Length: 327
Image 1 (cartoon, rainbow, N blue to C red):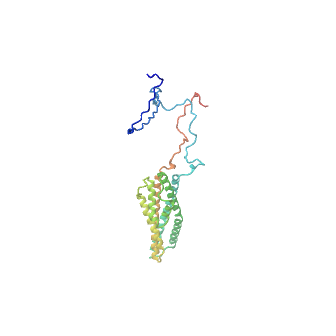
Image 2: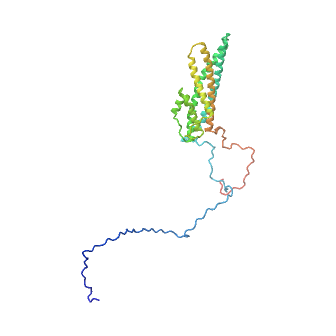
Image 3: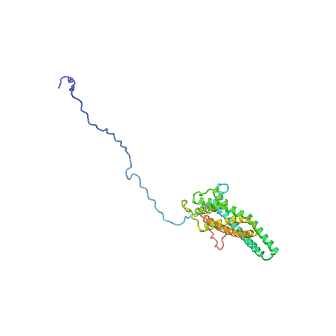
């Protein structure tokens, strides 16, 4: 060892002037992996959950005393009969039966009036034929004229009632069918009104509107083309025939001459018969579509309340009172 406390310092080694450092190969930087320690209890540390046991049915519940809960002591009533709320308004389906009943009744009355008017016109034509060869009785002619004028006046006035009720039923039925199917009607109310009331225009659109209503009532797909039934097709044909007879009578009454007047009597009788057919088919169609939308008649529902019991044995009287029961 060297005697001194520190070894002697050596001069630094100088590199050779021609020496160059060699490039080191590229080594990718290694990232430190992050480790997350999660502590979980060992198996068996927590008590296992017990599976629910299926209890055996032991019969209806029994109480040592009459229960203090129950339904209110009220008679059965419709849930929409609560006053002061939005539920007291009648839905289109509830209004439909009332409107249909009134509309069918007025249509049958109109059909009877139209049938009587057709008979009066036929009687007038028979008298015209008899007047060619012999004189007519004045009382018979006056009776024919009175019947004809009276029935024609009643038909003219009373025709507005079934027309108004029929249009009302049509709009309400479209709303009820839309509520049941959950889809909007294909036509607006304005289009329906124009398609039914405008002469000439209604010959084409009236049948389409009723066919669309029947399509919605039968719950058929909206993307499917409506296929009218035989009843709707018959109603559509009667609708067109009646309007054609009305237009022909108006045009024929503008002609002059005795023969034209006699022929107009026959045309009026045919127009009245077509009105009878149209009224009957309309009543049948309204009743059928209404029964499809609202098949249950509220009048046939029995009240859910016991009014009187006859012939039943007397109940057994209890001599002891159960503990906890209210006196």
